[in-house]
Image 1: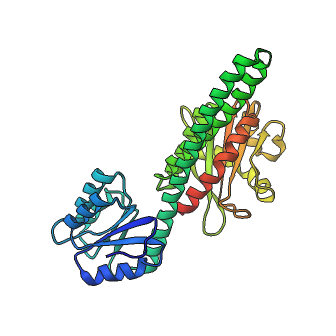
Image 2 (image 1 turned 135 degrees about the vertical axis):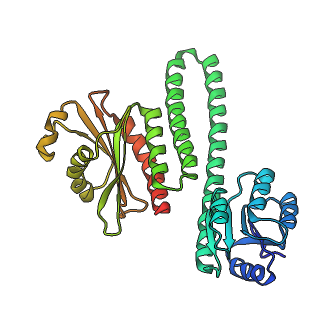
Image 3 (image 1 turned 30 degrees about the vertical axis):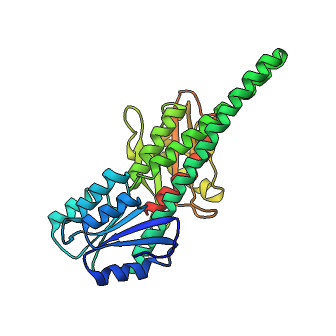
Length: 333
């Protein structure tokens, strides 16, 4: 049984007819095609015929466990996201279900609005991934085209070879940077907590720009910025020192949030005197996290101690990474 003929496909598995019909009625208006299965074996047959974009399954089915359905479908169609529904309170079974990384583990009676919100959010993520892949294919086609054009012009116009090579290198650099951003966005799709988000951000920045130290601050329910993470190679600095560096930057960030480079020694008057002996040669890069204009939900501060100072390329990278980072933190919040 199915809902409207839409692009996103949702497979619902439950051995209770009333609950299947309830889920169909709840999801049919969400711009999806809903298919209903009364058992795990039926769900697997349906998935073989047409791969679902999302699975909603009861934990206890008549012929198997919902985790078996998740496991089998992921063997067949790949890492399909799943929502697990359960009416049981068996802690061991719930822990087992959580190991299958469901996007939601929902108890009965169902919160239908929460289920709808979960569906909308996940389908939006899936659509974003598809669009990212389409952009990647377009960039690859563009790269091949540019390479062919470069070779043709080089053969025909030797006198302009230097200019064309420079243009190609610039474009290649832009494409490489976009590839870094797309790879980072793909990593964020699997980041379920803020620690995962900021770990990916730090590693991406280190790979692209070089070693850095840093800290991450996120707003609480009272709109206060709290230090939730530190990083550095080989070890991050102590929380107290990180907070002394970050506190003077927060007020400036609230007045005009933007990615910016700060010469710590040149602006030592804004920092606590206890930090002054560490400031010579130290540069900072601020990265505000704003999922939408006017909404500051966090701040990342990166810094280097006498190494190559931050450059305009670092600002460009920070600006490209700030929006997906803010979106991931906002989603996890």
